[in-house]
Amino acid sequence: MAAKIYIPNWLKLLLKILLSGAALVLVIYKIDFQKISTIVISSDWWWLIPAALFFVASKILSSIRLNGYFLDIGIRMSEADNLRLYWLGMFYNLFLPGGIGGDGYKIVLLGRRSEVGTKKIFQAVLLDRLTGLIALVFFSTLTTLFLPIDLWLKVLIITTSPLINWIFYIIIHKYFPVFVQSFTKANLLSAAVQLAQLVSVLFILFALKIGNAFGLYFFIFLISSVIATIPFTVGGVGAREITFLYASTWLGLDTETAVAVSFIFFAITAIISLYGIRFNLQSGFGKSLSIK
Image 1 (tube, rainbow, N blue to C red):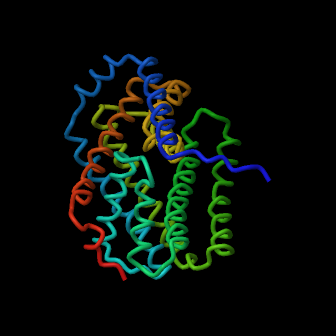
Image 2: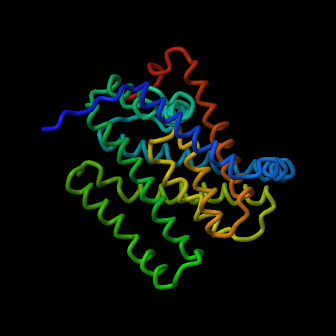
Image 3: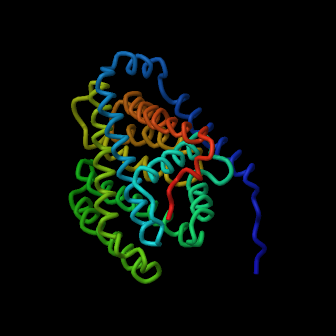
């Protein structure tokens, strides 16, 4: 049996920072940064208010989905407390990516505060992430309708995409039966999450005075979101921007405008996630949560 290679957390974090930095440097090198600045400055900023509100709504729905999985394993926590914990996890994932991260913090805290084993809590958090990812992939396949590819390929992609959800259900039913009861609700919430984020992106497009090609921008956003879930950068920083860069070039969109969409969405994400610092600074935050 081959020896398992141990990579210390500090080295993993360093590699993520380097990859994020390299991706951002490449994006900045490839675009006219002065043009992006002009696009952002001249945008209609009022549209960013509903964009932020729909992003917040997507995160509230995500926290409800996760709490449903927690309930399956016997962890009873109010939606308000769960949202506070979820928001702190957002802050940790984006601003404190080293160590165990936001998901790890939730697993450790709930493991200590409840009688449920950390293995089941880890499964709940993992399935929550996978449910969201599958919804992302499904909506991504729907937006292939707007791509400049053959019709038969669009039909093939869209008609086969539900198989992913069916396979996911089989896996849960066989290996994680305790979570089956939440499967339908979790999928509906995931769909609502993605719709809320697409509306958020739509308002960003309005802010940048983009009046066409919405479907293409939605496709790029969803694909970039899928890529951003792969943990090789810090909070997806760089991964989303480089996807917007090359996808917009392929689709014939204005590159600077597309990257500006990515920058603004990240800025909204960062500002909203920063609210979680309130709970990080709150003394005895973990003990203040009512967990049964």
